[in-house]
Length: 373
Ligand code: 5AD
Ligand code: SF4
Image (cartoon, rainbow, N blue to C red):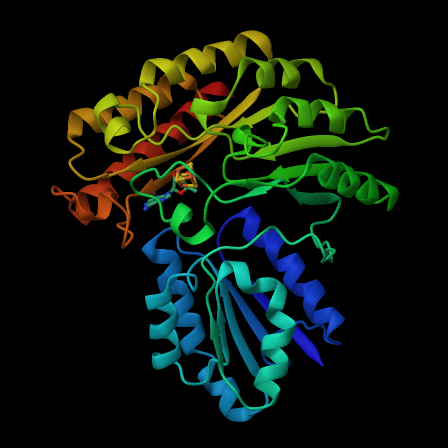
């Protein structure tokens, strides 16, 4: 029996798919090379922008033919998109050949849902919350890089973002569990890179008793003997402490690289986004990073066309990007997500204007990258 997993979205999903692979292997499936030869197909979905969801809908629709050829094929959907109850209901109604539709917290039970489907029952289940699963090891698939999850969820409620609604509140793993995972990964001998994952790694450990800081976690991982490097994502500018910057500067094992999403260069828009820092705060952090960590690579995410964003405000995003001289940025057109505060704001921006702004921003980054060389 073969499985095939299709992963959408961020690195956390890539890592989550490693967990899905393990669950399937424990059920006796082996990794297949295509959808055509699979006995079970799992879509690990993303809900961050409408485009991501549209891709899932299109690709699920295309599975109808395969199911007609192979009645025993099991089709399962999980991840951020299916955590939204209305979306899960819509999927089960629209695609009667989908067998399993489960939310982000239900993943550890995937094996049970598969068993139930074999007895002929379609499965939809979405829990509202759940603890980080410490029982399932990972079938790692990312070469010499080992992803290690340090926390789940997000407390920030940036007004455009669906993540807090589909991943729940921040929950940190115990430091000892993380250190043990790093030790066991290194023991295998084939991993040279450890990448720590979380929506907001800089607030790691605030919910633990006693609290542990992200800087302490980094330092403790560095104490583990071995020839390896550490990187992490994603950092929120409001929580990036001097101690973390100093730790990156002082520890040889930590990569000199920070992904620091700014989202906008304009203070009115940052406020509307609920980002809790100003353009000036952001510049101060960037200057500090440059001063303390020579040659540190910096990348960022920006959203253009947030509701009510004017041309002048967009120009302030352009000027911030020009100031920082990023190694790279990811530029996104604002996509309204149902249930978020921003989706209900007046002054939604025309798609054409969003396209134009995103193209100008990307052209600027390209020009800056060329000048740098
Ligand atoms: N529309 C566009 N981009 C978004 N992002 C998050 N939510 C949205 C949205 N509704 C972007 C942010 C974030 C990245 C992962 O995705 O820039 O940092
Ligand atoms: Fe979304 Fe903001 Fe949380 Fe990042 S910090 S996951 S953008 S709510």
